[in-house]
Length: 203
Image 1 (cartoon, rainbow, N blue to C red):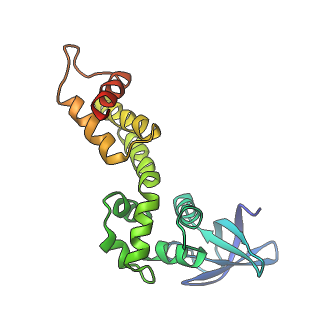
Image 2: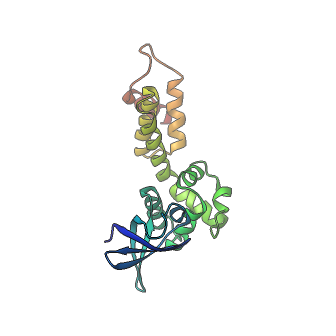
Image 3: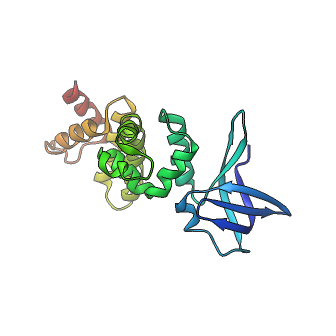
């Protein structure tokens, strides 16, 4: 499998690029989010790739960031009815962070505004990705606040633990928040205690 390409950007259009790697030109399909970040023609570029094989053809898809490629793979692997073409359309229609936020908030209207998606597909995206995107979002939030707010880190770690046990992000977050409103004599409870007390409330 081809994991990435590093070479000279020979040509680029909003939906495709050609990367010259030691004299071999690789044709790569890209989303607008990647096109907007490409260097000038002739400059060195690195594209993370997804190699897609079907009975009819072999296609390379390219992305500037790992977040873009991860979301593309999540869409085509986890959402029924979404193939590579639709995956590129989603990435072209919304930044990765905005897409994840829309899924977590179940904002079907925002997802429906992506060209080619429509309401039914947007509803299916929310239904099939909400928990998966929620785990990523919670992890990123925990990472961002780890050094500045230990209590926030404990809260996010507890939410992540509950999600891993099969609870939805929304109900896990509410259960942990409920425990934080009832502090014990020792002040901020540990992650283990937060999880135990939240499990009692959820069950």
